[in-house]
Length: 333
Image 1 (cartoon, rainbow, N blue to C red):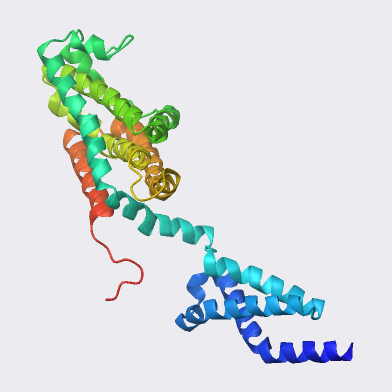
Image 2: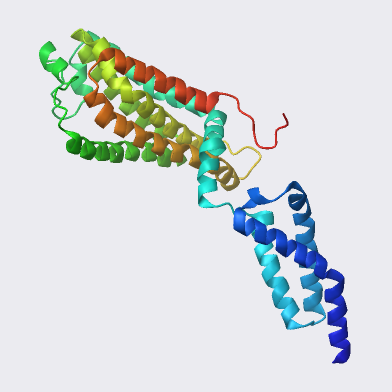
């Protein structure tokens, strides 16, 4: 019994300094996050963790004091998450998502984004040309009754692009919520359907494209193309960009399923899915912003020049945010 006590005392005396240092680093990280650790602490953390794990293994094998074993088990469990996992606070994680994760995922997915752009605007252009040359095509692309159709007059169509009633804030709030719900469903469907090699995603984008193109042709034929463009793109830059990104996320999943490369199909889906998840999560945020702009900005701003300025500014901001090269963490100045 005495030998065991002496052995436990010596074992602890030889290693306790490193345990206390590890404990001190973990407490700082728990209080202030990993950003609160110095470079010296970050460099020492993996080695101290491995030493603590080794000490725990030895302590268990020679049946040392149970208090020592319990202390080491707790210490190594706490340290594990900082060595191998992410223990950033929710606020830090959100900031990281918007600062690096989302734009990096979008800029890295430029090929599926370009494909989604073509799948949306290619059919839109085709439907525009067909409807402009024969208005009967409009009814092929639009099921049910649509008041803004080829039979509407110039005045009727123009009245839908402007509003003089500004006492509609409550109505617009409900309208924004409905728009966000509708558009986010389309985006999530475009993403979720990507598992079938991206084919349903392409079909969904094309369907929305022909709807948009034929709708645009009705106004263009009546000489309202300029007015409609401002009315549409004040929110459409953000909304259509989000739909394109959702389609790109679906194509990322479909590409992984169809062409896993050197990885297994499941491994390829896991790797691509993580980046695609960042893309679709950000796209939903964009749709929320677009719904607010559509419900408030588009309805309350009746000046065409302001609408065009707003649309152009939003396009520049999104392109800069996603594609302007930026320094990554760890890059040297």
